[in-house]
Length: 145
Image (cartoon, rainbow, N blue to C red; front, side, top):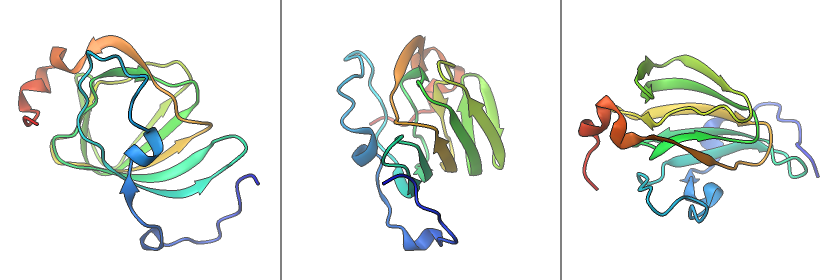
């Protein structure tokens, strides 16, 4: 079955789950990269044929990615609330982002936490680049784990 029509779905009617349930354990992540813990996700819509998804994602204060990353699909993000750093640029919600396939973005960090509406045009995959979180000016503000 592919993506079903959604004619009104209150966010509260969709249970929060760990993003680890969607992204997996990170087995393809290079061992040298230490990522922050996972956030929470509400999957609002998904296509079982293409792997496309629309999700509400909540990241806690201090959450960050370990390195810049790219995906094989289009990723569209709307930061609804909170803040984020993508590389050395700081943004506050509401802000829109669109990353075409293969476009490296990040590393990403949120000081206050973030609430995102995220759409992926196909199944999530990740390829990490050479720019690491430790190289960013904000890295000293990342809370210890």
